[in-house]
Structure formats: structure tokens, C-alpha cells
Length: 260
Image 1 (cartoon, rainbow, N blue to C red):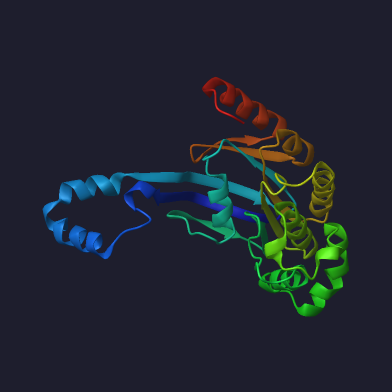
Image 2 (tube, rainbow, N blue to C red):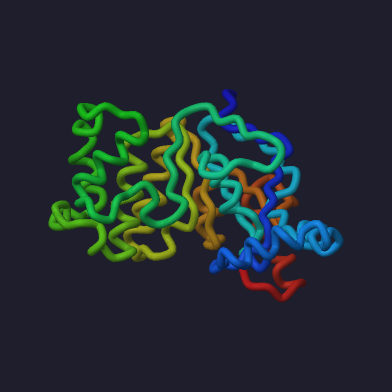
């Protein structure tokens, strides 16, 4: 099979937000700079207070795989997707991605609030590197799938979260990136549209495109995925069939008393 994504010892470190207040005055910055030579011990302690969102993630994902990524909140799922989408860089390690990536990591990512639905479809296609003629060929299919015909000339700032998801998924699914990355995009959609999206995901997989699907909906993971991975505390702790990986996740969640 053809390799679609490979990660090699990916680690991602963040400084704790408590060490970097949102509102810092110029005087505070100057005071800290002037006192630095006399407070090395304290500064070393502060530098040590970091969060490792990911630790040594090694994955190989083949072309055409529909991979489910599960784990508790704070496990590192979204951080991994952002690295694969080139939104953030890993602290160490590397990710090799073969092909054009379409990402639905956060509602409205890649959209412009002041532009209309129509304009954002063309904007998204341009970001993916498509020519206008290619986008026009897919335009009617995108609109029909999203069921937002009446709102095409409305600026996105007036869209509900559900309408955002409809348009975002329709664009990503029909503009045909080689790799589709989705993070909890169905959480705000209605049940009918969710099922419609799951069917479309299967169609995309059958076309040989790769899908990474993050969800807390374990039934959806088991229904559409052929492989799943479990992240906990930034580490990859399970990789295999969806039923077995979901079972491990639910078991560990019950033992720790955490929410799924």
C-alpha cells in the first residue's frame, strides 16, 4: 500500500499559560529583565513548568485508511491534527504528509466571517490550490450537500454553528483533498446530517482518500473506521481494530472515573 502520513517521534511542548499572563505591562517586562541576573534559580524553575501535549508519537497511515483517533480531553488529539495540518510545528520529531490536506479542526477554520457562503466556497478551494474552473465544477454538489441554498449570499458571521459545519464539511468533502482531517465536526450537527456525513466519509474512503477522524462518539468510530488509535496523556497507548481500542478506552475511563 501507499503511505499517506508518517510521524516520527513527534513531541509538542507548551509553556503553561500561568507563566505568561494575558495582560503584561511594559513595566513588568522591564522589571523581570532587570531582575533576571539575580533570580536564576527562580527562572529555571519557571522554565521547567511546561506541558508536553505529545510525546514520541510514531504513526504510519496508509492511503485510503479511515483512522479514528480517540482519547480523553487533553490527550493531545487536536494538537496532533494541527501538526499534520501544518498549523503548528512539533517541538521535536517530524511529520511527513503525502498529498493535499483539507482540515476541519475548528468550526470556521479557513473561512472568512465577512464573506458570504458562496465566496467562502471559492476561498476554501483557492487555499487547497484549486483553480476556479475546478471549484465551479463542484459548486452545485457542495451547495446541494450542505442544504444551504437560501443562505449562499449571507455573510458567515450570521451563520449558526450547525450551518458552519454543513458548509465546512461539504466544501472539504467535495473539493477532494487527498487527506481529510476532522476534529469533532459533527458535535453541533443534527442527527440526520451526521448520518449523511458518515455515509459520505465511507464514499471518500472508497475513492482511495485518507481520513483522520477525531470523535467522542464511540459508535461512529466503530461504524466507519477500520482502524483506531488511543491517545492518553500525549502518548499513543493503543493502535488496532476500532472495537478493541474503544473497549480499552472505555475501560481505562471507568477505572479513572473520567468522562468519555
